[in-house]
Length: 71
Image (cartoon, rainbow, N blue to C red):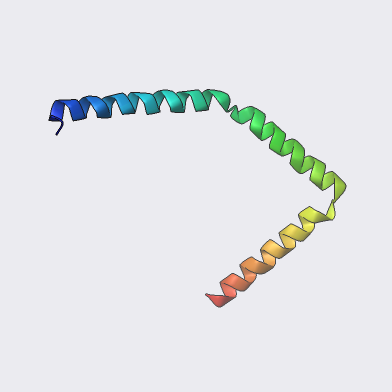
């Protein structure tokens, strides 16, 4: 069996590995760039199908009204 000190050292080492992995992943993700890409995609889709936004809003409103009526 491992001693409590060895277990604590293993936990600390694992914690440091995970911390460095998270920092590496965070450095790869640029939230502004991803937002800009998403916004560009939404603009592209609504330019192709301008009725899509209105239809989505209608369905969402209808569903909300139905849900409120059920409560």
